[in-house]
Image (cartoon, rainbow, N blue to C red; front, side, top):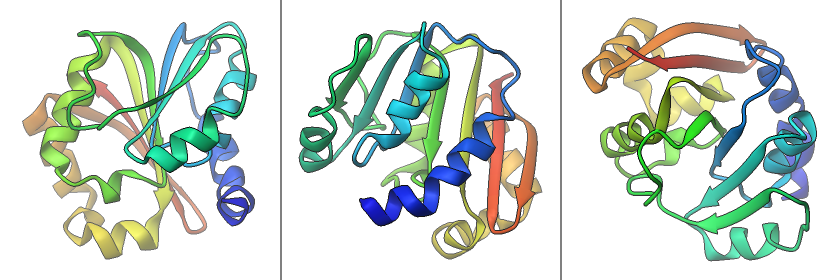
Length: 170
């Protein structure tokens, strides 16, 4: 986890600088590992309620050791979160979406729980994306996939070995 923090926190900082708003009332962080990205979301958006989810009991147990107001960690599966429709203004996933067991079901679920004017922000290492989801190396293929689910890719940006996607409902 310490290696993850050292390697990926700079990617997190770079990615959130691309957000359009300075306030997102309710935020979901998917795939929290030790909770560091979720904590940074809470520090970046101190007035927001931030929830971090992970499928790993170990990750959630470690993350729950952190005590902050309006910061929650829950063991949930991205394919079926159990959250209400249109619950979140911002959903983030850092270095995780290529591990999701069922990409279609996961994106459909995220679309369901994202507010109509919300933003889905994905960021990861491009080489991990190429390895785990090689068909999405071509942005056109990823755009078509998102459209088939009811999402629209607003923009993608690369910096060195990192890539980020800003996605909205269409």
